Image (cartoon, rainbow, N blue to C red):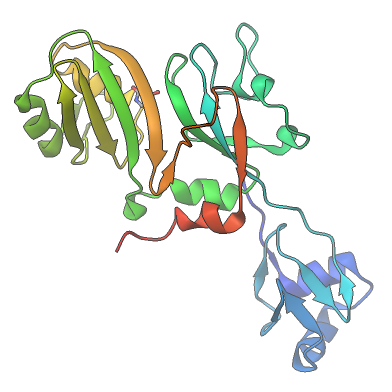
Length: 239
Ligand code: URA
């Protein structure tokens, strides 16, 4: 998941026979571009996904991949598992072995899951300061009352982690159904929040992350590819 970053001069000298100390001259001569833009400094950092062109020679780079997957029930959010089918077992995608999961769902939780080979993007998705909302539809064993709404906004103490959950917005749909918007992803967070009221979550479905909605016509077990622009739109702070 770690995305290695390399200085431009090191990157170019690794992939060509150009000496590191000649890079500044090539930059001054406007002979190096990074993703179509002129390089401006020898110590600019390069990720494996950046397309670097030096004097019309394109240096090797990886293609960033982003998948939006509709997770069915009864599947483990992992890349391998001895006992159960994993999300990756279901995905018929030529580059699936490059992918990692960005934000797991429990075995019986359904819905929107993101996968990528871009570790920088994945790490940023979980940055607390970006406050990216994850939207869940929750079905419970017992009725949901107005008190839940107030309590979830105030936060619930999670003793194990020694934290109080961030304000979460609950929209009650019916006696046993609600939508919950969270900006963090603690272990079994939704179930534990309802557990505060001794109410069991019987069905849990994630239908959106930030502006990305699970498409209504995407069957369980299927995926769509996102463009890099769509993927990075998630990282834009909400204005
Ligand atoms: N919260 C849970 O309890 N389970 C999930 O799968 C996701 C969020």
